Image (cartoon, rainbow, N blue to C red):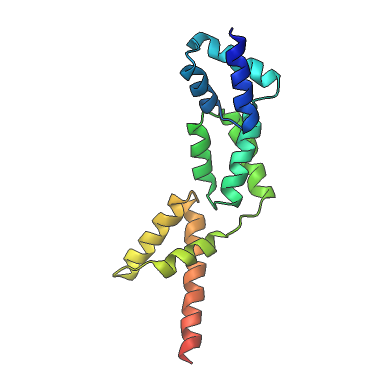
Length: 162
């Protein structure tokens, strides 16, 4: 094991939280043999330079609160970063309970609805459903929020007519 590479990996991890995938790629770029990569990861984890759970918490909190992404999109992104499923299953529900997103799903849909045009009401509804599901929210939640937004818009139009 090369101490110079280990020190560079420590520095790399100390600058920001790193995912298992990012760390593996970092080590592979330094031509660390694939059978030694896990040894490096273990040493970095023991030294508390690297912790997949800490990374998952940070990533999920930021994406949910600041970027208003839904749980499905966050889960998929964490899987792509090679975070173990057990960690994702432990972290994600906790974050969703604790954190308040900057924008609710209804606010996101309302904002998108105001910028969107469609030829028919059905096309508009389909477009909004795709948008909400694409943000990572379950279809049932998107449907409920969209119904709420559409009802509020109908009431607003009726009050403007009077």
